[in-house]
Image (cartoon, rainbow, N blue to C red; front, side, top):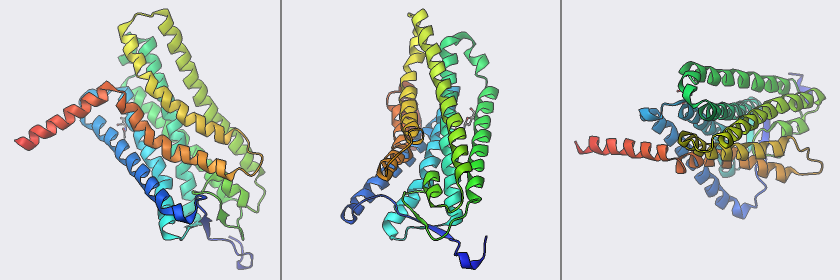
Length: 314
Ligand SMILES: *[C@@H]1O[C@H](CO)[C@@H](O)[C@H](O)[C@H]1NC(C)=O
């Protein structure tokens, strides 16, 4: 840190959402309800998969990891947003801001990698149904999950260290509801060219490569379905792909739209609305997309509650 004469800032102000003050309470209630739905929905999926031994298959273990990552992802930004809306004190300490940025990147990337693992799982299930259990061994599943954690840890750390290098003073008002990388870069008084290039390159790699891998596995799935149109097991496996595809398009649609389409004019509101989409709406919808359309999940729910009922009546 430099001397006192430069007034190095020790905290940022998160200006939050561009909402009129009369509507503040309405939006507070809305976001609180959305956050609670996200937490409860994802917790339900994790608990259900953990309790029901029939759901201990690679697909559901990945789904449970995805739910965990969704839960954490929205917990990085939502509690702080809700607190700011209520307390009228929008400040966040410098270290808190960097930590928020780190975990935001961490869980965002983790989600992206887990979606690839899930696509690979569907690809093996449909294209090699007979070798499915040998290929998707518990060891491979665990390795894929651990690899995702390690890669995403390094990526988030890289950006956080690059950000910690920059100087900030005087201007500490963030026009966003969380410590977003691009919003922070706009405030810095140092040269941010390195940061921007690294964001562009790694952002491209971390988004485009998983996206291409998912497209590739679905291309293989579709060709295999057209080759053997009458396999009953293939159809059953394909029916689970619909949910996965919806989640993939929801996630990549918003993220790619935001980071890879350069905003030319003053489009803060657009950025905030898009960020709202993937920090709040996507993690909230994922459990519903997976469980409402999924017969196995519904049956497991029935089994778990039925067991409880028997236990209580004893
Ligand atoms: C994540 O996936 C791994 C490997 O399949 C599994 O062992 C683990 O229980 C999962 N974790 C959660 C929280 O679901």
